[in-house]
Structures are given as C-alpha cells and as structure tokens.
Image 1 (cartoon, rainbow, N blue to C red):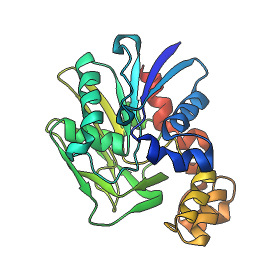
Image 2: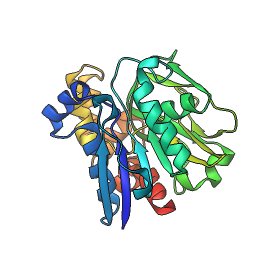
Image 3: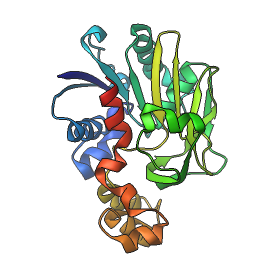
Image 4: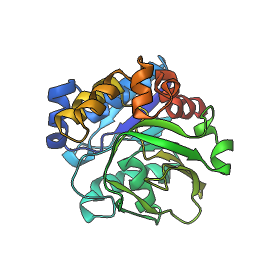
Length: 256
C-alpha cells in the first residue's frame, strides 16, 4: 500500500469549471488517474491556495503537484502558498512528481525560472517530444518512444532550469518538457505535459473554450480509438493508449 499526497495547485474558484463540466477538481482527476495505474493507493488531496492545512508529511510515500489554471506563473509572489508546501516536501526528502505548473513550480523553488512561452499556448497535444540522452536512460521515461505525443494545456514553461537539473525531454514548442532534479536530498521528476488527462474529456473541454478548432477538438476526443483522427492530428495512435499515455505515472509509482 502506498500513501500519496496530491497538492491541488488550483484554488476553489479555478476548480469550479472543472467540477461543473467533469465532476472533479484538478486534484481529484489526478487521483483518479493514479488509481487507474494501481489499486493499492491511499490518496489525500490538499489545496494550499484555499488555506487547507498540510497533513503530516512523514505519513506519505510520495507527493504530486498538479497543474493549475491561475493567471500568475510560479515565479510570482502569489504562488507562495504552493512554493512553501513544496519546500517542506523537499525538506522531508519525499519523492515528488510535478505536472505542468507543478514542474514549473519546482524549477522556481530550486533556483530556475518560468514565464509565458514566447511560442504562445500549447493546447491539446504536445507533439514530437524528443528524449535527450539522459531521458532515454531515466526511469521516468522508461518505455517512451522518441517523438511521442501526450495531452497538454499550458501557457507558461520553464525558461531556465535550476543548476543541477537534468533535462529529459523537449519539443519545438517548449524546450523543457521533462526534467529531473536529484541532489541535496531532493528527488523531483516533472513533466510539462499532462499524462493524467484523458483526451476524450480534454477535446470537448478545449473546444468549449475555443482553444482548439472544432475539428481538432473532435479528433482529440476520439483519437484514442480512431487512427484517422490520430493521422489528422499528426500523432501515433499508440501514444494515446491509456497505459502508454500514463507512462510517467506508472513509472513514478513503480519508483516508490
């Protein structure tokens, strides 16, 4: 049995649209994805932006920091509630996984930087994600094929890696799509993309927000089971298989 803490990086107001359309907060969605990977998990969710008290960290085997839809980036002072929690998690030496905002937060906390991408938003799928030499050998990306695609929704990106961080993957949109930081008692693995997001739900959601064209939103909704949709989107249909899509989640849980 593994005891996992999920740090929901959204305040309640930002989670409200997700709760209304998908029936789950960002943290609850991440918990559901992890439980799909393994059935021996006990999961606790805490929302620092809502002032929720951090449980005793010594009770947990690992910690996840989710993505976020707040208007500020992780270098902003308004991110302090999350940053304070991450510093406490790192001080405890707990293995930590971060997606999107969670990865950017780690970069900021560890001495790097994040900011809005000069390439604009990357919504729907991060395509053509290439492994670095270090990434090919790192357990986070075990089983990933070079040039993979995976769900993503982001405006910001890591613009400067912390000293000592190891770049694991990148693509033409964002040079840092995954990195690891494993030194000074910290064990952090992070991805810019969202292996926890189901394209079947993500497609309609992005279509409603007009962040994808109607055709792309429809194709994303069915890409997992429709090779023609995958071809139109320019991705391998095999990358959309749930087990493949959640590769990093499986690998991180296995590492615990």
